[in-house]
Image (cartoon, rainbow, N blue to C red):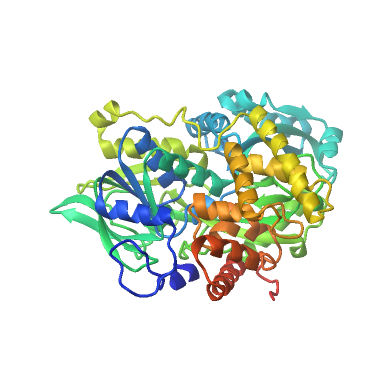
Length: 579
């Protein structure tokens, strides 16, 4: 894998079977997970810790099954942490007449707004319309009206048609020439990596077992029947067997790589790996009341609201590179800039970009075919050994994908007897919007007191941080603040950073974080948001993690160096010089 694994394979795990070489303190949660993986027999083993693998773990656990998951890197470190961060039906799929897919996705959008309101929010998006007034307004208006009828209206109400003047009021820098109006509709925005983590942690709270930095090397067979997997602990280097009645391959795009896939699977369909690139710019660089949806020939580009920033994406291009550590190429970045500048008169340049990221999507289709036209519907396939693989699909419909793959693994009779329980299962930390507002209000006073004690002068900082804590952790936010008090970690990580030092300790204790990349790239998303990729705060983050994970000063320095190397490669601006 990446540089993190290269250094960590030299660190042993104190699991009772380890050699006597010097080793770093292992967090208790990982010791217990590895011991359970090696010693127990599971009803189902899931390989892959993206959103679908995490969803399958939760689905199986909701049925009363003893379930386990292994992930060779971090939770959501691949595709599931590099999406457009939208929970949506997919307007452009209506043009492809995939009404069933859109309806299903909108059903799941409504469910996530109810089951994870701290992680998924409904945001307005403006669809500006150019061209012949009645023709274009009628064409796109009828499409969005169909979107409403298929379920979008349930959460945000019916879309609203705007005259050109009102569209410009919403986004003042819209290109005026040819503008005939606009349509405001609503879609969901989410933190993809944190949502995947919340799904997995909900499963853990229900009794599931998960091990990260554990690579499933090959299937474990009893004759011709699959009975588990041979795995290697990437931190300690040990190999051991995990035994399970059923095995699910949820490795996504990794299954398209013959060198990386867990197992061969006959009749499983073909993958079309598709690269989706994104750029991140400061919020003040593009004035608008909310998100925008820009139509280009053959696809759509979104300008997505994000705290203090806009995320602009995505591209859709075939890519045969290795799926790990994919970065956004300059051609994709220029393509996104050109799309925005064509419809919005802000003259965005490369210098406006504070970060980038790219992910590989495992679409289902014919090799060599168009990635734009490849199906976003999912496919479940199985072979004679009992291995079941899930591929394709959309982030929004992960719960349905997880349900279907567990159904297939159990078989029709057992699946009917043990039905999925995830349709109405709130994710960890979930609270109503009213309760989230109350949580934020309760946190503001102690944060203000802590800021005053430090001589903090930013008047809006306590309120802003309180709101973000509630939005990120939900009902767990007061516990994060309690940890801040216990460990004297209520200070921000750095200048103009709205994250507390305590969040680092919380990630190491409760959110399976084992590296700076886990924290800064996925638990906090600062690797993409800070122009220096977090170089100014990385030593402080390493110090807090070191206190939790037993890193001495030398190890902390090594972790900072490794993190910055990978962050600049994966999330940086390709042409920028780095110090």
